[in-house]
Length: 63
View 1 (cartoon, rainbow, N blue to C red):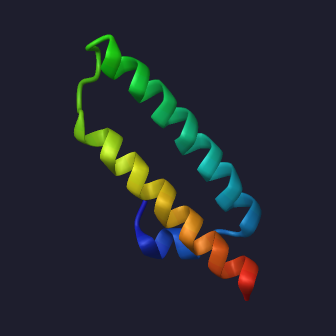
View 2: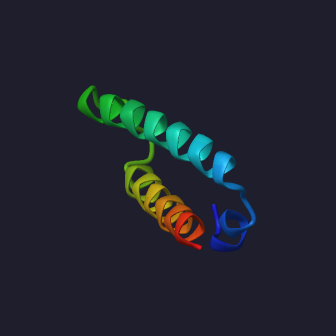
């Protein structure tokens, strides 16, 4: 997700997306251990997306 897209989301949508990406990351880690992951860079991208979502969420909570 791009930063502009993330900023438009509401708090509840941010929380839902964080949960979704955490599940995706969990599955990617399992695929990595069993050597089934097709794009290893996707793990890093997912982590960065979770961090972006959490950063925007914290800004909305504080504001």
